[in-house]
Image (tube, rainbow, N blue to C red):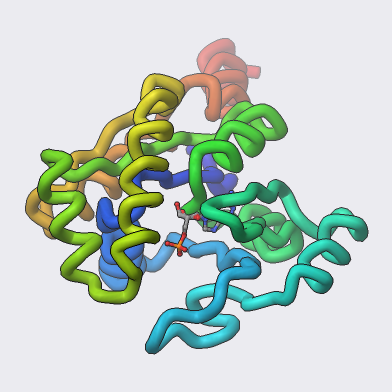
Length: 206
Ligand code: 5GP
């Protein structure tokens, strides 16, 4: 059936566990490609340039915007974040499902540009669990944590625009859930118009 890769956007509150889910998904299955974003935020401890992000200065980032090298970009808590175009196109053409882990403004821009994009929203079971995860991560100051909780409230307003919700309670179940949603998406009738045409001709003996 459908051999073309699907573009998937995964959003969710900061601390919802998107990164961990994606890492596990890629470890378990090999048809997924994760896009690496560019950002002006500084690297957290343990983050490597070109692995978690391409870390850029504001000037470098603005040059990428000017050269139209990004599919989308957005400002998030005072920093730019954007998706480089070349890698995404290359992987989709090679038949891989490409995952963008981006916030809501960017997600909606991608959906507008590419209406066939699958939008997934990851959420923790409760607000308390979210805050505990952010504090437990130990990489942000209380001030930034408060900003991220506030941003979560704003982002929750846009949840209805997503195609599916994924509640991150038990990690393993969550990874499997994401995989199943994507696999089912491959069977959507509108993604398989050529197949339908083919079987119709076949039935008529053409
Ligand atoms: P963090 O600083 O925690 O790594 O990311 C902050 C937020 O930026 C997260 O919600 C993350 O999904 C989002 N983000 C990461 N890369 C991109 C991107 O390329 N574009 C957009 N619009 N958001 C991104």
